[in-house]
Image (cartoon, rainbow, N blue to C red; front, top):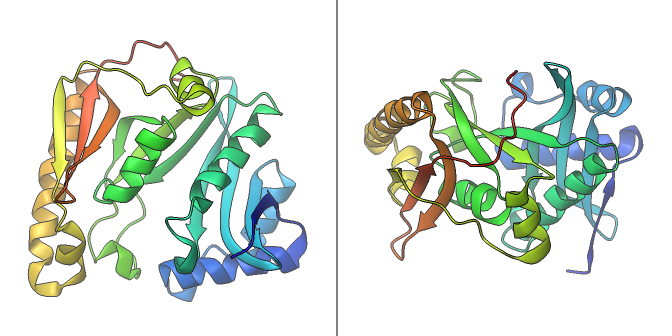
Amino acid sequence: MSEIVVRKCQGTDEFRLCVKLQQDVWKFSDAELIPLRMFVVADKVGGQIVGAFDGGALVGFAISVPGHRNGHSYLHSHMAGVDERYRNAGVGRKLKLFQREEALSRDIELMEWTFDPLEIKNAFFNIRRLGAIMRHYNINQYGVTTSALHGGLPTDRLIAEWWLRSKRVTRLLEEGIEPQLEVVERVSVPGEIYAWKAAEQTRARAAEVQSRNREAFLKAFGEGLSVLGYERDDDGNGTFLLGRWEEDWSYAK
């Protein structure tokens, strides 16, 4: 593995590489793939198509589309994927940091994306490594898909808000200072969730966890709490830590 270079993807040939890597990672049916033309459109209308390259090989990508809410522009990072051989090597973090710098160069202060709250590694990465917060939960956002990664479950999603100029994010990324918080609620995911989702005979256990946690998140968010921290124990279990965020960053009004 040589030095990974992260840069904007250029032209349809590189966009095709993103489509191919998407298929390799998620194994969607053709009908559920983000098609080439969507990469072209996102590039044309102010989104981001970012690639991580090992020599001439694309080993990771991220696609974002522009959004507008109550007079504010932001970016929605719709999908990011990394070649299986390059996972746990910092490629995903490099992609996100490039996205942040590019967005800030355009005075964009917010990036959002969705992620599966049952995915322990993704939750840890989004919260502990990037400093994203969550205060919204969407039920079955994309419908039940053909991807084996989703295990036939409803595609419930947490909405990650990455406030690029917030004290929380700048202190974490630029100074290495982890945010402090007063924990009000905890929502836990068992480490066995991956095995439960993968096997038909145990999928009902995963569904029970999803349903239980769905209600917990909806209740907590309704009470004004936010996901501000995350813990993993030695057995691989993950726990969301919820409290009250003191910074006043919102495009809700």
